[in-house]
Amino acid sequence: MEDIEHIEKEMKLINSDGRRLDGRSFDELRPIRIEAGVLRRADGSAYIEWGGNKVLAAVYGPREAHPRHLQDPARALVQCRYNMAPFSVSDRKRPGPDRRSVEISKVISEAFSSVVFKEQFPRTSVDIFIEVLQADAGTRCAGLTAASVALADAGVPMRDLVTSCASGKIDDVVCLDLNKDEDNFGDADCPMAIVPRTGDVVLLQMDGHLTYDEFQKAMGLSIDATKRIYEMQRDALRRRYSVTLEDILKEAPPAAAPVEPEPEQPREDDFGPEGI
Amino acid sequence: MSEEIVSELMRAHVYRLASTGQRVDGRRLDEPRKVSVARSFVKTAEGSARVKLGNTDVLVGIKMSVGEPYPDTPNTGVLSTSVELIPMASPTFEAGPPRPDAIELARVVDRGIRESKMVNMERLCITPKEKVWILFIDIHVLDYDGNLFDACSYGAVAALSSTIAPAKGQGLGDDFPLPVEHWPVSVTTAKIKDLLLVDPSLDEERMADARLTVTTDENGDIRAMQKGLSGSFTYEEVKRIIETAQRVGRDIRPLLQSS
Image (cartoon, rainbow over all chains, first blue to last red; front, top):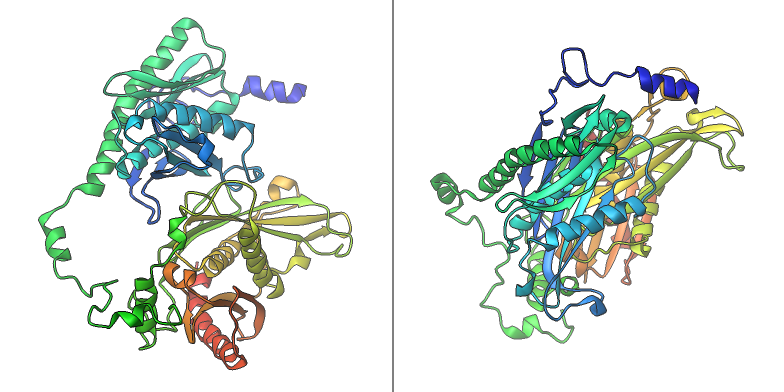
């Protein structure tokens, strides 16, 4: 035990020149890549790579809320399920929800609840699924950021996208977007999510130890970063939905009408005695 | 729920096309969809592969740990396969403990790998009766567009063949690639009335009367079979299905082997 404490004390997370272990400065994000519309069956979907995180998000609905007793006659439910794949972490995670996943699912549901125009879809639910395929700290932020793009891809009416990012403290320095080592050996982590257009904070969590000044500094870093991430989200949607003249021309001659039933056949064939 | 229903119009169309040897997506009756394999997709896993079979999309991760062997097989490693039909993949999938269809799926995939002796499990014994490698095959279905049996099996085979055992971290010498000795390929055929369709799409699968999965090895030998659904096959049909599985298996195997 003493050995471990010794190692932790010795472990330097910030170099003498102010760089972090992965070479970033204190206010630098890890590389982020977002892609919209990546799954076929889902009504909306998105994939995000954020540093070493790989996260998929899918949206179904608004659809009939199930079980029925959960239905709200006045508005839609917004329900999120955050899940980690067993192989997404170094020690295999047992499949299925644990207490951490349940909590994260709840706070993400609540974050989206405040932006979806729920009143337009009484008795329905909007179901958001977040699957962490590879984890490297900050999975809830990555998942939420992707889910937001998936909601837009599904055409769910919202006040705005939701954008998420975390800041924390390592070696007494407030830093943006901690990676796994920084999260494990750091002093604090503070994930948040914001509605960029209005500035409403729709998710906020914190663990560790921050002074009030440090907290404000962390929030400042996060808010600044969400502006950049917001642009990446919008960009992913633009790439998915922008149509060029070449696209239109390419699609023009339908190769073979895919699921067109032959209209000339007599109807008996369709509803024959065998009940095809 | 409404997704489970295939319209009468579609049923009639699929059947009428198939009786002239055609399919809705332009394939022949004995032609599988395109298989694409992306290996080492997940760095946190010891091995992984993302496999697409048409639009069906699965991600398989392999994790390894050290544990005790089963008392009746003290000299062999332990293999454990599980499938999660996550609700992301289809409007008909629900969260919760695995249902019978997911359990059957995992067991059929497991059988193909186990029975073909794809991985030499005896070489995963560290100390007889005490310490062996435990191999977890975790299959995550991401997008369900028909025929999970084959998609999951391809994913598992591709992931296993790219797996590096983390021996160094356990103080057991150098990391080593899994001892892969055989190459099972699963081929599933659906029967719609009197017609046999290889690698059924979602609509085809839903209107199928019966289903037969045949796993063959590189010699064309049969290593596992599983019949499903309430319909039946004639013996002639079973033989045709096996012959097709051998031929299709030969075409698909190199896609799973190449690294």
